[in-house]
Length: 107
Length: 117
Image 1 (cartoon, each protein chain N blue to C red):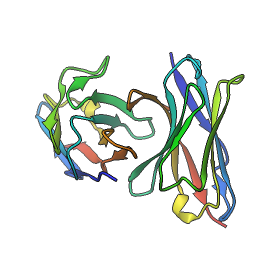
Image 2: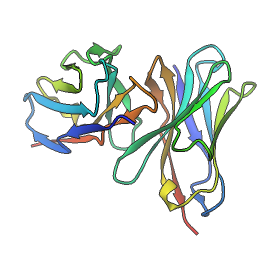
Image 3: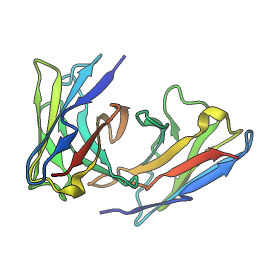
Image 4: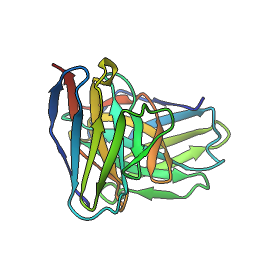
């Protein structure tokens, strides 16, 4: 199975700040990567697919980048509603696997 | 609006079977896409369990292949998860989700299942 190593596990940032979360795959996943946001008690929401494509309705302050084994999710100008957990998912190969998640809090 | 809702027992005894239902509204599961089960363990590790396609074919995570079955009732627009011979390691929050291409665009709220005697 492809292992997804996500960092950091937790992150504290101020409103308006830019935040970056990273996922490293154990092998090349050829941009087969999605990012999700999950707020407490809510279902996960798709943010990014194909490593850098913004899902419909997702604010443009979210962006994804990367290639090969290294990928990142960037949140520009952090808003209070962005407090959540974020996780990545690779879909280059079965079985689909997930990162362990990053918990984002406000400083 | 597409909505998915999981239902089922919150407590299952070890060695028994876990059975969950995902009810879908706003989209007919035979119209397209794949319909998946995913679980999140205490400690937040997530595992894709498998899916049933719009045509009824299935694909399972090899780690579960001997214990898992995903079926559907097209008349009720529901799909189901059965996981046999559960242990305490199967304690998790179980989600159903729509798989579009290779990623999940709609998820249920999740149902917490505890395996305990």
